[in-house]
Length: 223
Image (tube, rainbow, N blue to C red):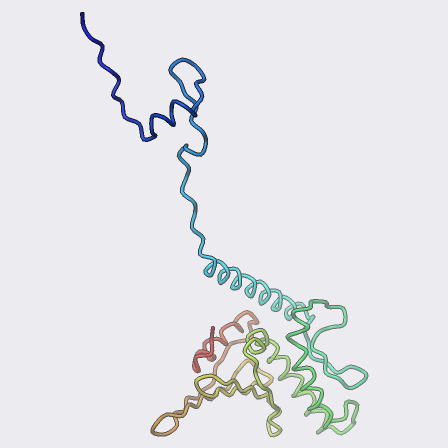
């Protein structure tokens, strides 16, 4: 009489677990609990990288809507009846954009105090007009400049708006009524002072304004 061989099929689970806890659904079939079924590996998410990408997308969207406002005539420097400078139109409402404008509106209003808004003196009125034109060009770069906590001043000789930013060195920009940006970068070294200067021509295309980063990169403050 031939002796039947005992089933020696190995399992990855202990025999006592299989026999005592896995219910038999039908002859020869057992139900395997879901916790032991193979699951697809979890997708690893780098939270820091994800935050960075979301931040870039957010700022990109805000910058794009800022350019839309400029091109749509919603952002055009003017002086209200109280002699205060306003960059945004009264009908335009965007809290982020208003925040970008707030500081420069206050500073520019202080500059304009020197020149009566309704003065018939052609020289004074021309000065005001030149300042407003410079503010129009400056507004193209406000998303970047305000993020870096820029300091502003008025060049009284040319009526261009000056911007200074501190980083590894000092970067100074002069912005007038056209699309050119004069820049000068100075950094103190162990043996003297280095200077880099030039003129950036960013064209009249509003969306080329983002290229202001190429100048800001000079002092290593981009981040």
